[in-house]
Image (tube, one colour):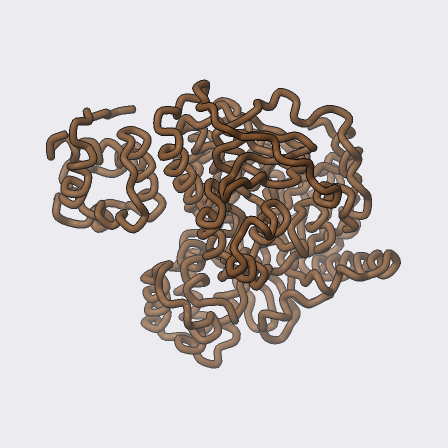
Length: 523
Length: 89
């Protein structure tokens, strides 16, 4: 990637986005079978599958990088920071092999170390069912049969089961009064997808069974290598990729998708998959007038998930980062509770240590600290207060890190903080949400095609369809539905160059205020 | 397609999805997921592949009809009538 050009384009969370000087839609066709809005892992995976199935597909991404929150950035001093590479379940390997290619799947490697350190317990774990069971017996003193019963119940949970019980109730039923056990079982999932004690046990159970069972995995070579490989695969399969393209709206006529309006230009499409946030898809891209009042009210009632803060710490070239672990869940808080994980200047954070092994051939290391966070704590700060809170976040993080890596400050030559405002700025997610919407969003995501024919959603919803694996798999689930629709609509036209002509008149000019989101960000 | 061809068609699709599984001794009346490692995403792949290769549309509420090979034969038989087997694609 051309560094200077990109840094000029996005100067940072308090700057505006400079308008592009070239036409970002250069080379775009008049129409596609399907347009994907947004290039998170769900959007990319859906696009790849549908292109492989023979449909003509374009991806429109507002940022200059493809990948959504699966992203990275470079900084002076040779630093490359991964934003969300922390770790994912082993299932990602199979998903990449099936829906991408062997090269991508083969770069997925297991992390060597995962550690918990808090006032209730300190332990290193392989993050497997066997090791968690051993730790719960030997460190926490639980009966083995009780632990096995917990694992067995969660493994037997089905997505369509009753969602009446909460995570907190599930924990109390199995391990009453054991806040330390609840911490071990929930903290990693909370950081992975924003789960809380109040969320449905069923959503937690499915993620737990996938995640806390066979270790934690990473992509060797870094996020940049992953996205580069995905981009090459998409191009090989004939997908047209466009970055720096702001989609103003999905054009709907007579209850059906006609295409999208992007950068003032109409692109026709038989179907659209929105990989944007569910609520912004309905309210901003589609428009309230194109869905039923009941659906709109339902979508408005869907809760957003929390946002995040991150602190990016670059180790100076030539300095060595001593081995601690790969992933460290750390807290100085005496006990565990879900809301406290999001507190402004809370006592809990995760450190992802990226040693040179992350990018074989490189001798560089970085550390990324992450917390969950609330938009409301950061959204309304004035400039001075915002800088003050960011400085405190950095100072607290360095203090916490120094306890694990004494003297680490002297080895660091780049420090940078991201807040919910930063996430909102770069992703355009409402309230900077890092994990989409809460559980209830899933039904509206599924039901969107019933409201607007040909419109599908594959953004993060409902905890299950979140994180790298959840997002990619949700892209597959949505692609399957879009493929069924396209094949029914265009029975003879899976060939890429045979497009069925269809009446698709240009939409009426839009009122000015629908096309101003580009300047509207104040993150 | 004959019964044998439908079974062959399904096995060929499963082979592309789960290449490491041994499909030579599958019991046709037992659930596929009880005999080989097939998760719900794999199942979705079977549905997509049937649509791609044979133009067969299967509504979501009828996915369960494909749980066993016998079920596949009974459910897909009418839909695959007059179509020819495509393997190794």
